[in-house]
Amino acid sequence: MTEQLTATTSPGEASTPPGAVSPSDEELIELLRDGSTNAGEVLVKRYYEPLIRYLQRVAGNDHLAEELHQQTWLSVLDHLDKFDGTVSSGGFKAWLFRIATNKANDHWRSSGREKHAKEGARLITEETSPHAGHRLEAAEQEENLKRAIAQLPENQRQVLMLRYYSGLKFVEIADLLGCPLNTALGRMHKAMLKLKEMMAT
Amino acid sequence: MSSLLENLDSQARLLMYLADELAPEDRAQVERQLRDDPTFTQELEQLRQMQDATHSAFIAADAGQKFPMTRDTAVRRVSRAMKQWQVDRAHRSLDNAPVRRPFHIPWWGYASGVAAAIIIGVIVWSGSLPEAGNHAPTAEQIQKEHDTLAENFGDGFSQDVESFRNSRRARFMLLSRDTSDNVMDDVFMQVDQ
Image 1 (cartoon, rainbow over the protein chains, first blue to last red):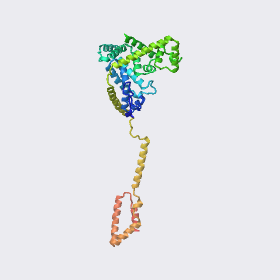
Image 2: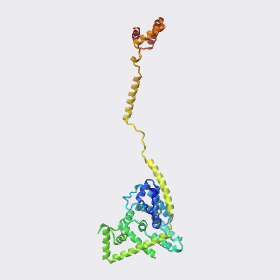
Image 3: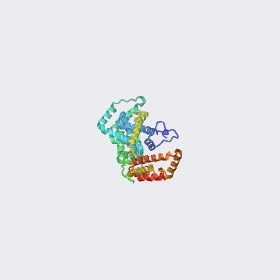
Image 4: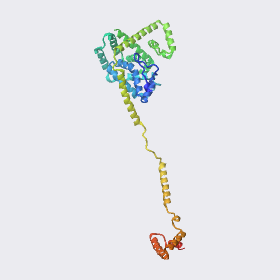
């Protein structure tokens, strides 16, 4: 069965061949528990883009995002036996993003938020854009967004990133962050308002 | 009004409505409110624009930002970690496996073994004991043998037998500690007869 495993791809990537049945996350988890590394690789491929984008935005720099990506999957492996897809709200995806969020939070806690906020801001202002020509506008947009995101309070940034990159429902995000639904929605609303203001200036 | 809507403020309700994450009855409730309240409708429109702008900003930003590593690199790295994890887990399961205790003999096993050994010993010992009836020649056998020898060796045989008998008696009495002359007399009496 593992040879037939296929990754559910993100938009723009090669799609699953017609007729091939893509196993669910929970099925892949079971296979991974039984020793199939191939099943694990399918999961990593499946969530590579949303997870790494989420970590890029939350962490603020690529090196840290890369490190957090690795740490997240290692943590997934360490706690794999505890995962119960039938109990966990939002299934494996919510669990994966919860771990990623915790890893990012651990990092901020251990290294000091202010220091990193300053460092992130410095990186954003000092980084020279590698993009040119037709991609200049996109690069500017990216820089603007990065700057705006860096200025958001952490709790608002997390809700916004989780919503956009994980595609989880608000109820699942609230559950993941351990806050009431109304609070999560309030943070989302404030984050969007601030982003709009900052992107406009 | 459902308990979910009761716990949400107007912005939160509209966000849930836009995200299409309301139950049908809650959705109908919000739509009634939108029909009745123009301000609420205006809020919804602002929220929708804000959401679209954020979405567009993310799309543009993602298009302008490279991934920190390729997907294959990420998979390769995690795959290595997974293989190591599988090995570690196998080792852990071996370490945690219940220790196989050596074959346990219950207390009554020892007693039974000793009893069986005694019984077997007694049987073997008793089986090795000579049975008197089986080994001692009968008087008829002795007489028959005597007659055969007398025929073969002639008159001198009786004297030889007598001297042999005497020497045998002396030797037997010497070897035997508790055998009295009476016992041997009985034996020779049977021979003489």
